[in-house]
Image (cartoon, rainbow, N blue to C red):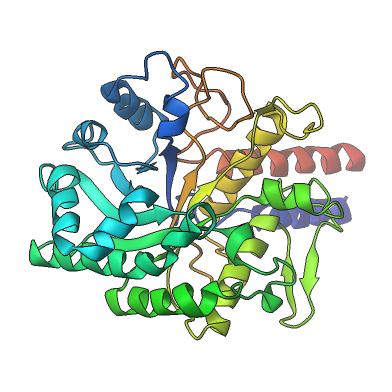
Length: 378
């Protein structure tokens, strides 16, 4: 009887040891509003409905992949911070003349800031891949936007640009081998990293474990979906680090690449990440709502844990789930966390607070184990 009692106490202590120290998010979590997706609607959702949807979900940030003054205005006096994007085609004129940067700011920022919380401006999105001929204009454009903000007396909006992981990083595993691809590392990325360090700004990256999983057939499905299994890990033999999910591995590959380039402590913002819930390609059987919900829920729980990544204990500064809305027509992939009518697709996911199993869930587990041992003793 005594032995069973002590076994019971040990079981409770072990179970309570699994209780996380905090269930609050240690990183800002938002979503991306894609104007290309909105263009599939006969009538795009009204901006006030979008603002209400963000508030209802409990998301603290919204990324606009193409800034729209009406959308920025919809978030006046709200607690939602915005990450604005300047389209790639505007990069050359912004680089050539600072007055063009001022003109853009007078339309998209000055009428609203600081009544609308604007945290970051991304000059271009995946420009090296989609508009490679503009690469020489990128850093001058970024500098002109930053200097224009300074001229206007605005010092709390950071300026950067957004890259795509698969287009700028040589390898994801092992992360210690990751580098930025040539020739971009010398012509664009290293000068940009110096600018980010000088201005205390962040490195922005679109990061999709789904895409890497599709490219690498040896990756088991549980690894990108945050499903922990006894053998569900990968070891980086160079650093001795063990990875239990693909998201951390990809983030640390970015951190390693920055370190190789000579810049170790620049904050990272994941501007896009997600999992498709539908694809018109019948071969994409992993693009389904079950896996999409598992990915998003696993991501949120991981961010809530406060563990960061093995190479960066504070983790990423911000993470934006791609994307807010489904397309209204079924073409390609659907990534939205909302249906076209703006109702939530995943009823079991809480985007704020905690749905990862709190104290009472763990206490119930402990009591259950105690009852099992009591019955055995009986």
